[in-house]
Amino acid sequence: MNIRRLFAVWSAHFIKTACRLTGKQGATLAGKAALSIYPPILSELAKEVKKDIFVVCGTNGKTTTNNLLASVLEANGQKVICNRTGSNMLNGVVSAFVLNTGLSGHLKADYACIEIDEASTVRVFPHFQPDFMVLTNLFRDQLDRYGEIDTTMNLLSKAMKMAPNMKLLVNGDDSLSTFLALDNKNEYAAYGISQKVLSDENSREIREGRFCKRCGEKMQYHFYHYSQLGDYYCPHCGFKRPHLDFDGTNVRLDDGITFDVNDFHVKANYRGFYNVYNILAVYGAASMANISLEHFNDVLGNFTPQFGRNELFEIRGTKVMLNLAKNPAGFNQNISAVMTDTSPKDIIILINDNSQDGTDISWLWDVDFDRLKDTNTASITVCGIRCLDMALRLKYVDIPSDVEQDIEKAIENKIQNGTKNLYVLVNYTGLYTTHNLLKKMEGRK
Image (spheres, rainbow, N blue to C red):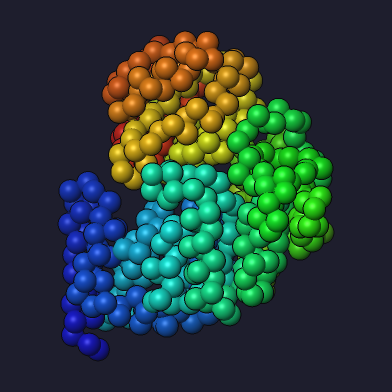
């Protein structure tokens, strides 16, 4: 064993333990240290994965899809490396591998399920070439970090060319993801929902794929699901939604989620139409890799979402649902999920503008907040660094809100004086703090 590699592994474990003792997450720092001490460490550890390496990319749904896929593999008795906390840039990926090693510095893993930030794929793929990539969707996200969506697509295309033997599973209902698959030489399959499920209530949403990526003509749709997802076609060049290898049919959302795919009936006690896509992606990835689906519905029933993804807390008689909402498409889907609950409720919205969030919060004006008028909402409280901007955004659609920058005070107020039904929507940097706060208030360890 190379002594520098061993030192890198031990250092990463030490940093992780020290961070945990001080109440910090520490995964990114552990990976950064390991990579600095021994640069080939990720490449060498990835070679120790016995079977397949999956990577999950896309604007929304990465963490849920990746973690659910890992749970399906584990239900089949497999040992899986997974960056479950969502640390998805290069240092976080390194940590996922390094922190799963023993003191010997070696891995014992059958599979790896790795969520990767789209812009980070070109930094990660020089270290290893995955066997499969799942591409969930491509929406506009944090313009000051990523630029226009074409920048993200170019980076993903470059990454795909770096791994020519990698098989793709793409969301066929997303014209941008489909174009990437067709524009590269990787073998691919598509998943999607071929039947119209929702009404046209979301017709005002921002559509990233309005123009054909092949010829520039305005795209036409037989119907939308949400944002640009739906049954699209170009009237000029013939580009259209591909054949769906994994087609979700008979979708029902009135009692959790149920649907059929390839003669398999799926049932999950989740809320939110977007979760149909997450489950389809996992089903498709497992099928492509010939993974048994015997325990699939059991996994769905037992799966606990990573913090901030439909995570439920019970605090002194109040049901608190925590959800991440970091871009227009994700926020609109969170609003749709809230609307399925017709009982009285309180809503807290936390908006920060730290570097990880994106300092440009103009995306708030692309969210259909006026739909909150139809949610039987007793109160809306805005929190975070940009709470006044959020209050102004709501005022423009004639929705009153209370301003309380401190999230702890806002939650405590609603637990004491609210409807006993609280939804907390936060963008990225508010997630970890709010999650830990709710755990503490609930009395979890």
